[in-house]
Image 1: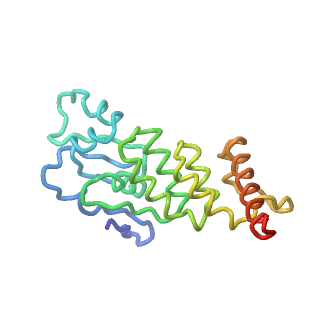
Image 2 (image 1 turned 180 degrees about the horizontal axis):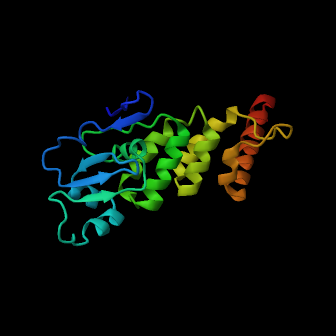
Image 3 (image 1 turned 180 degrees about the vertical axis):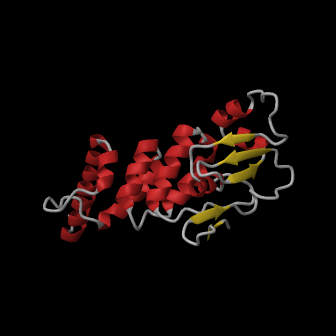
Length: 201
């Protein structure tokens, strides 16, 4: 796995890519992060997963281009490594927090249009259903993933939603009023069904 090391002054972390982004047989393109770290990649793989990258990579290279062309990316090295590992063969996603995952999902789907890797994305998101169902519900609703949203809604039954004396979770800023209403309605129906079972009705 890629690791940060320290530069010459022993204070500033420098990210060093690991396999499969170094010494990879057949690599024919370099993605250069915003902080100057190079990732050796295969043009065919990037073109397969992202129509945006396919279009960019198909642009004829100007004269004087290095044997292995270089593309400057907007993402820093850590983020670029995380993005690539979502779809690159012999790799596994290395996301640590749900907030990181939310950011990466937006980049993968909205910026690079990688619709083909949605099953992998959903698998990663589902890992947080128990720990943070409201955030997972929000992300799932945003992208229309009803199965993940339903799983998160069920998990959220263990969490109060009407604590008016508490501050609203920041994640609610990214959820629609309709989606939140539906979640409240679901809680209400489940509570009513539970009460009926208790009362024998």
